[in-house]
Image (tube, rainbow, N blue to C red; front, top):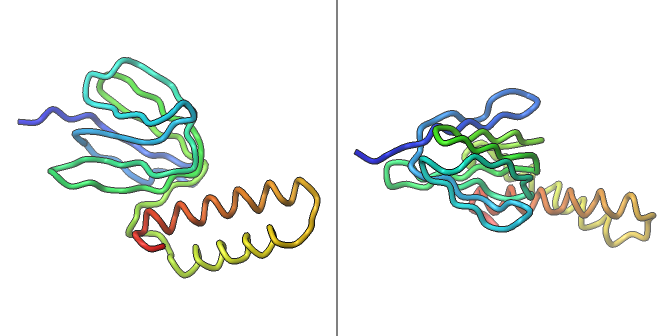
Length: 134
């Protein structure tokens, strides 16, 4: 019997994912993190990226837009600003968001708009990657 760790992914809109998994890996601000059952307690800020969950020999992907990862020996909690399971991602919408952001980045605007467009572009690309499209 493989050891598992409980994972819950929560956003301001409510829970997105709850399951027992064998391993969690993701990109924190400090670098790549791999979490197995019994991991030392930890709190880490997350980048815009994919949360990879290994379960029954398969890997499930969740697109996460920033937030925090809290690890306890028996539980991993991800508090994300936004999170979507790969199969729930609206690829058409993500592509449109990517194009909008790219157009905004080409236009000459002030720094605040540029930063916002850059983040929007990163989020859209992340969602498309997790959905398995480019």
